Image 1 (spheres, rainbow, N blue to C red):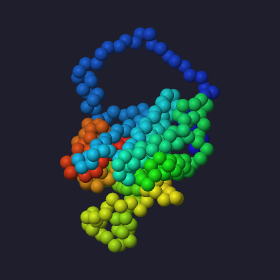
Image 2: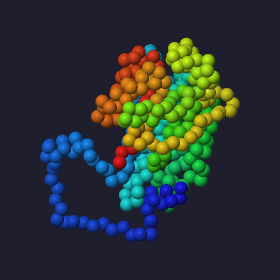
Image 3: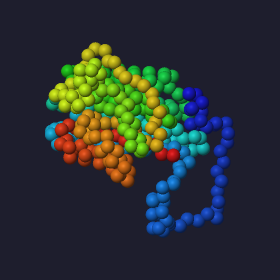
Image 4: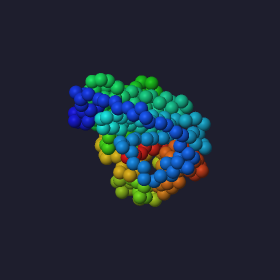
Length: 303
């Protein structure tokens, strides 16, 4: 991984040189030139860019929002190779009046703070320092600290927590509960990356329910694992490649519980940008009744 960081910031022993062309002139682009740039389907970026957007709604049947999210995208580019960095987190709190939103908000803030502190030197200091721990250990430790703080700040409540740390072409995912991370491919495939920690999912895995029965199970929202509940927290932590020619999506069950895969794909395909795609999905969830709070984060690698 040391080579990874050397490539990011370049060889500092080499001097840099700025060249200038005093004969250069500037002129505004014509409207036709601007339109040609916008409509071009063959634009190639010199370096990879990570872009992201989010959408959120209280839904149609809830009085307040117990979902929380973090979306951080960082870029440092220059002579050295650009390595995209992103941290995306979704949490869905539970526990009734205010405690659910306290739990989810505490969870995302603590987790994001823990991870960003580990990468502060990597992103901003000269000379740079890579984190000493492996990425999966950093994610695991951040979940454990978030678990401890939620137990202290919102006793008796809990929250789902799904986080994705993007560095270059790799995603390190941490997950507890039934919010989800997906890989969405432009070819028409939606792949769930995380496993729901819910009663209905466990009964389905044990063969007590088929998919149709699971979809209509009356206690679909009952979790068997949540942040802030129980003494010991068991976290799913794993690393996967960033979807090639696709998207990383994180969402709460207020979206995936009512919006079908084909509607997710259509929401993205019909949108001119990621922000509109996220809003399309939120609108689709509300049109379907909006029974819960809705949160979605969508990230794409360009170049």
